[in-house]
Image (tube, rainbow, N blue to C red; front, top):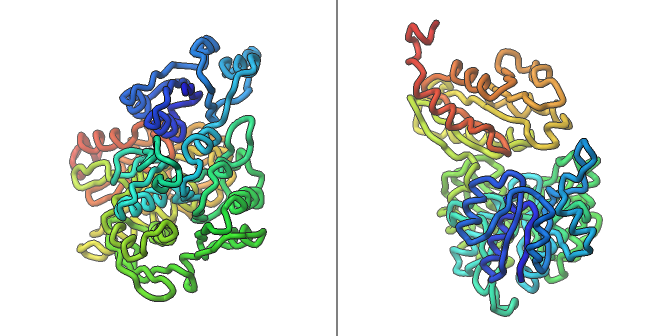
Length: 485
């Protein structure tokens, strides 16, 4: 069929477009500000892109319009629709569907779907799980919200994804987002996927723009649990009280736990090198470059989920030793004059704290002197960019989140709250800048050889990584008269 995707350059919708094209459908799409890298990826697949949401696109006459959740019934200041194409589709009574609905009905039907849900770690855990299945020879399909380094792409159909009977097709791993589906379907995206294996990685309050409180999100997670068959498996983080409440609402499937001392799957050792235990018995050791307890937990979740798809934990552990992290997950963007700049997707306070803790642990085990000056300082550079952070719902947690940083630099532009006031408890350790240029100057002025500069945002952050590397490279040497002046 011919599908036309509204909001095609988003991570999820772009992945869906690639899958649909691989399955043999004709795919076109539109977005506001058609932008790389997604636009380049889509055009390389032969997908035509249109700038904007003009109603003249009705002339394309696709079989169905697939609507991303960026689209709404919003109006401009003059009363005209922000998305005139959507208004024209509704007025003409044309067929339309959300992205998750179309994906479920046309590409996931009948396959063994492994869905990874949670406030944090969805992309990384999904990537680990897909890699374990690949290592085991299952040739899985997948759709994740990032680019797994082991694959170099964010989505593929997998074996038998096009033309083969669903029962003969390989498993499909999907990052299962709790954000709402579309303006006409306010359920979480993940209720559409009908997984046979569901991972509940963790659950905290987030998405303050659509959820009133944690209980509202717990209810959505239970809606996901309701869709898992009795022959399915729910993999749950045993450390999370919120997930215990979700299961207490009812669970009709096999449950496997991970993380807690008494769990089906547990870890023994540091996050960079640890034994995986099943039922208290070691099944293998994971040695890899990843850091942080959060990634250790992600690994346990992936091992437990892969087992349900037929991969023995011993094989899964071997696969994880060859796993390379997702782009924008503690990704070193470059080093200059003894200073290293990293990029990370962390934006929720808990994610910021665990990311900093992971880097701190990594530095502590490096073969260098153990005093902080020799190991190097951590400079946390962050942008409160998510809707939840912009609303200030969790601003009070930021000093706690940044405890492991030696210095913290916040981009305060576009916030509805005073970042300097929120970070005041950190004293001189924290600085706030109103522009990216000012932020770069602050960091460059403070940085010294041996420092690790960790930039955290769920957006492009104004290209700060390249700007910092360039500014640090051209900065006068520390101690020179120019720098002192």
